[in-house]
Length: 359
Image (tube, one colour):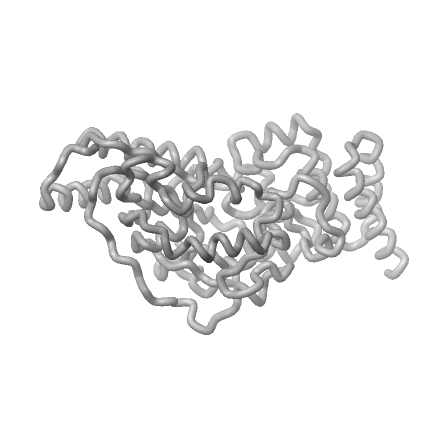
């Protein structure tokens, strides 16, 4: 257990934690209790509906997700942190409107956030522990943790209709991280209001209709799921809706009015790597596996393997306007492909053939 501190000492430490967090590049920090009883039935209903698709890890350790003390015994608080990631101008809308270019979700064009956020949270935890010895464990999308409900309880924002956390002054282009602790820090107050109001921009703009109701996401239709989490074939009926999105999707955020207030990343780690913020699909499809591994080293794109990469780019090429160079590139790949990406290449060739005949 943590060394007992007076209320005055805990308040002073909370102020220090905010200052230390800012020095480490976090834009906001808050503290929540770990009672997630209100999340239990909605989360279990989401799983029962099968909305998690093949993300079987979501159905594992349900009890630990809903009760942090089962993950880290003696936890009484979650210190929740926000780090903005929106990179320098990468013209996301312009890339999306150019079907010959590949769109990578803007959270993934720079360094892998798992490495950046968690390492800095670990440094923060070490500094807190030096001031008040106790139990501290840092997480960033790396364990069965219900990040968004905890962050909302900690006053970092509210869960928007697109299921992402929103902040009135920062939108939603940020990563979340947590430190579980047995230190009874003073609690921050959540914002009880739903600032989405009547707006349904995120629901209306979703290319595949994955947001089936406010704050209800059917991941099986989500482009981020289809291009990242799904390891096998992308359903035929959804392929045309993916457009030129080859890793993730930002549409529900790009068109959210609150993201008018989004701020740029405060650290250089999230600046785009060469070739990831809008290269042509033909350039990206030409990458062999060593090139793919070299270009994506240290980024979140390593969440997919090379076969998934070719699958995703092939679908985008199939969705592109007819170009004989596309057909030539697709056909040249076929003799060297595993069955899964090859099936998508065949599909893309057929889409290009139809466009040629109809054009």
